[in-house]
Length: 232
Image (tube, rainbow, N blue to C red; front, side):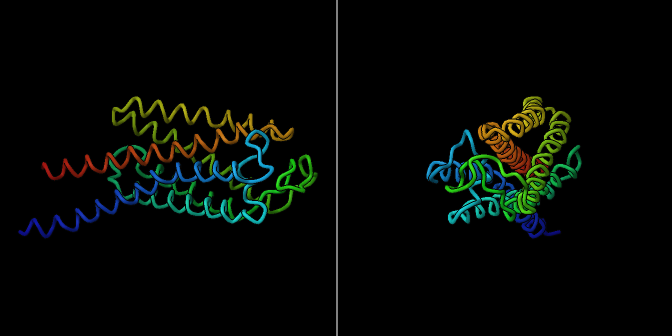
């Protein structure tokens, strides 16, 4: 039997899996970095008053749309990579599905713009809009869905990491899963008065960091799995 010929397709599959998971490693820093750069560059934008979703508005809004779309696609690619890992431990099915849901919903959220509010973009009403447009409503639903996907994913992967005897990773996932909804509730509560920017930014940082962290860990697992197969 030609083991070399057999190992080449397997090695190629494992390399593709690592490349896909690397997309998730990039996704979090890209989303937060691009959002912060725009927040600093856009006239009238305040991180304390405005959610980063408002960067979708105005003529330069296409930049934030591209940020949402590219980050979402990277997350979907990472979900495919996670799906390709051996599903012999807990979380092997639901974990990738929830990461993929995050990516898809991030793209959807970017396709629907929020309403102008709290003076952004310049010329917008000084407070919240009296009525919510259909586009803003769909944006909010997609945003809530992607955050819930990450929260659920946190507990799925916390269980997986406990089963794999990785207690620090399990605690990190559980802490993110518990802390993110607190930031979300605080941010939504303060948004009515135009003070929800920082807590909602915290939600974006927490969810983005978790996607990247899990992708880093799963990529390491893929290398370990390959080494064990070669040793066998």
